[in-house]
Length: 261
Length: 367
Ligand code: SF4
Ligand code: SF4
Ligand code: SF4
Ligand code: SF4
Image 1 (cartoon, protein in one colour):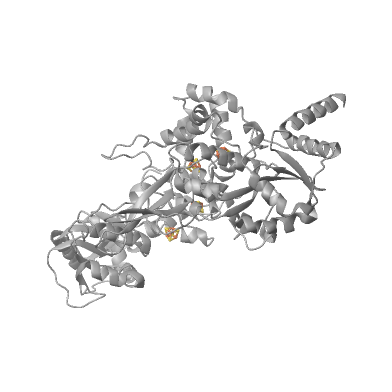
Image 2 (cartoon, chains in turn cyan, yellow; image 1 turned 135 degrees about the vertical axis):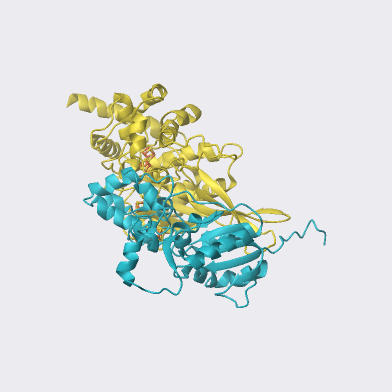
């Protein structure tokens, strides 16, 4: 066999880590039964505590990190992972945008909220910090949004990285997939839907079941927030209510889009 | 009255001229034979047509002709283009030795219930996909599909009369004109003849002057119901003059860039391709092709990060200039076939009517 014919890419050293979140994204990878063995066969899995014990914590080609940074321990950990990994992928809504726990991040009332929930003089095991997405601390190379991430989108990115190719991001709104799925648009019935503001990738599961998109893939940069708010308001919703719903999944990142409305 | 008579006899004369196009024949059929006849077409391929699924009308494969909605009062949300330029499919498989086109989606089909404007839409797509070098996927699907046209009734949004697409005299194998008491059936291809030949007993060879009069009457009545109108002829000049119009900024502020207008427009045909690797470290994978839209921000993004049409106003301008001007100068007829889908679809009322009216008057629509 000539080298020309057989050119397998070298197995990249991979680490998968979970911070504060529901672990749904790691689970999704594990639950991809058709591909899981292929995945473990084509990478050098160094650390994936959820799937196998005895992790090796050294240099990495790619680190996948799920969850938001919500404790000082996690803060240190993400800095350490960043140092060791050539490529860092934020995996899932919490890592990408902060998740629901970052719904109020940046409101300058963190201390107050912490006290309200946990009371006075609590001794924390691990010191909590205001929940933030990974890129509040380190540079992130690729984002894999979703709550949880989508199998097809995740594996398209993972396999690109295995082959040393540049992954494609999806800057299109949920509406794109919604129409490819031939789904009736809720907006035409004057019903709430965040589709035009939200990154696609979920195959528009909610509108396809007659439910509104509530934004779990996070905002798209191109979203016309101003006009969409105006449209939803014309359906009788208040700005406050729309903001509440959009913040739910938008986390930390959504705030910058809501500034000038 | 007298004027109407003259008008209608002139119409008949014109029609007889059209109908007597060589190879174009008209037959007559009683409604009771329709289902049986359509069922018999299974011999020519898998049957497709407009059906209702989860409250949405769509072209789909059918199990039985009773599923079909041939009333002609509604258009499927996504045009028939999806059967020739599929929304999403695998174009080829690759490994380190080369690539292998995947034509597995090409099958023999009979598409029933296609309205005249939709057939015009397919004819416009032919110009794009079948010109040398032809797109092999489109060409394969086109060659293997028979089109059985059906007459329709305009909706509130129909613009086909303005677009000159309310009737059609090519692009179908058979065309059924529903005159309630009976169907007039145009035969448009040799495949159409073969279909008729199979069940000759269902068709009457003689179409009387009286039958034709009923057809003309139907046409005249139908011409009265159109609510919207666009002067397509003047649009290329208007577009030329409107390049810097403020109207674009007005629409740009509203546009949600949802891309729905593109997905539903019968002549929009852009797609993106993406290579997807298999989960292995060998070089194997597939190339996928998916509908794209010039309303999306990355559409005009090129290597190096330059974006030719980053602003929403530029994107809208491209969409409408293509429909109303450039398509026409390239292929002779406008890129809008007047189906009215953009009118029904855009959540913020940006469509071929509001845009052309605003450009003509120089005034934006009243809120
Ligand atoms: S239902 Fe929602 S996601 Fe679908 S097209 Fe309408 S706004 Fe977009
Ligand atoms: S439709 Fe919206 S809320 Fe539903 S899964 Fe997709 S991104 Fe999340
Ligand atoms: S014109 Fe309307 S349908 Fe088209 S992208 Fe803009 S908002 Fe969506
Ligand atoms: S521009 Fe509008 S009316 Fe014209 S063909 Fe496209 S969707 Fe139909």
